[in-house]
Image 1 (cartoon, helix red, strand yellow):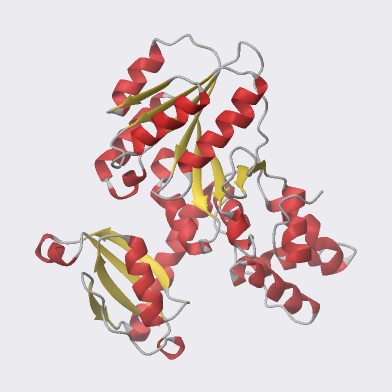
Image 2 (cartoon, one colour):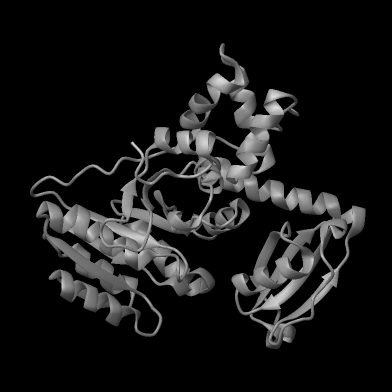
Length: 365
């Protein structure tokens, strides 16, 4: 096991190059701002772990991305294991602590593990689920659905009642589907049920983001307001007696902006009644989803929302993220159509899709 460090402008750019140079199994270990003396190469210093024997021949370095290789050898293997253990411990704390090692599987157990891994689960999680299923009276085959369903945390979306107020905020990186998810929920759970709905944005959004949301609000015929800071939004909410559904879009650039993240954390600490939905693309790997959960840990997301289900083969990574983090999911985004392509998460349906088909049948009964 070795590590290789890249200097890049974004994690996704480094990840693309790392997997091309080191192989598809390259695993993100750490990410931090670059030291001042090398910031010209990229604002982030991103380290990946990799097995030299499994990697393809290194490709030429792309323009705008510099890297420095650091072969740690066997002496560094324990350090990497420790770093990953600490990350998983923090990631799984809400679910009752880091799970212990799972037993090796053989025979039917091995086949079940392989099936879960093909669906997107990491090996250690697949072994734990299979081990739990094997404890049942009807063995692995009969117990897998129950073992999966029992571990997947889901939070039902309770419809609003008249004169009730509810605030939902959407967190996550740029391009993850926050805006589309917000609009779908506004139509399906607000306007379609004749619930008064408002849309707010806060913080430093990208160029044109507020204008795009304003156009959506205009088409829907709902009030919209953009706030430059979360402090301004907090003041507005304090004096508001309006009843209905409030939806807040947060800036995607906050993932890499420490000050923006701190401002968001302070805002949500003052507003514990807000449901915070962390939006994640379903095609990401378990380690990448875990990284996003860790990045937003200070804000304490209360829900997970996975988008792009129409573009993935299996939902093991999404289910594993729910299990490890202990954060319940409420919605799945199943495509681009508004408002049709959003559905509430069912643990039973997800477990069935993982075990019987390894893919989500979005409209299955």
